[in-house]
Length: 160
Length: 160
Image 1 (spheres, chains in turn blue, cyan):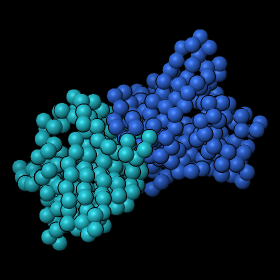
Image 2 (tube, helix red, strand yellow; image 1 turned 30 degrees about the vertical axis):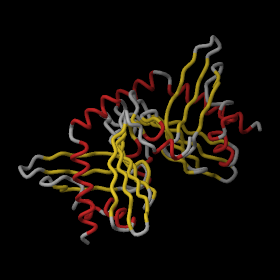
Image 3 (spheres, rainbow over the protein chains, first blue to last red; image 1 turned 90 degrees about the vertical axis):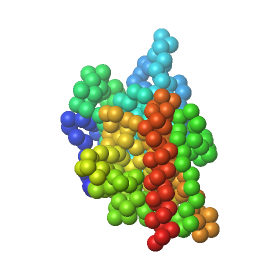
Image 4 (cartoon, each protein chain N blue to C red; image 1 turned 90 degrees about the horizontal axis):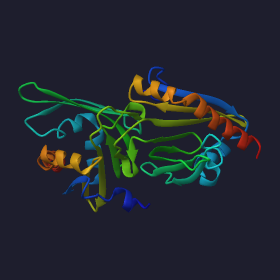
């Protein structure tokens, strides 16, 4: 199976957001991997990212906490699967640290970063177990939510 | 979190088999990664491994078929998570190719290979989501099954 086969979205199972960001790929990678930068764009405003824990290696923990203006909190707990600097970052909520299977798997996130001169073509994909889970994620507001965070990411980096 | 923390077994959740094998680590790695070798030891006899599909990279498929003398077949379908030549091989049935979450996760297999002179210290660990799943795996015959395959692996390699 080629890379194309592994990373090409399956339209019945995956959801995808793409965007060109007008900064070099190193800056996009930094925004995903430095906690203080990640906090600035990772959660659609007015919610905020209040905590981030990154153990940036296969099997390492990826944990974040989002908080609403009213103080409601949501914890995202997952595990990094693949860390290819400036090219690909993969994590999942289907596992905990040390690749331990998790009780309620929902999705795997696959971020791909393609250098295009001084810009970056950014492809963010959510992979699901079946069409029903993909549909649920879409109805929960995938395109609005992920679209907003990618917009926040681009605005942060292009304004720096 | 240190490597020790990530790979140290949790006695409430993990099952482990260890054995010294009197061949260099390169041979043990080959027995796990070359399909024709894997078929010779991977399934407790008199069952046999009749098919093996290895796409040996993170996100690649790991599929095998076991067959009983009476023709009963069992398919193991999983995904490689980490491939560190001659040191660590990790795969799980909690994912399919391309890191897609799987419908019925059971375990992650973490194989560690430690060179000790001309021998290899071999540590095979099964990680589970909770104590009940660990207990179920133990009652299904983990120690007999994995113990037998490790014995078959050692006998194959030490006799070559």
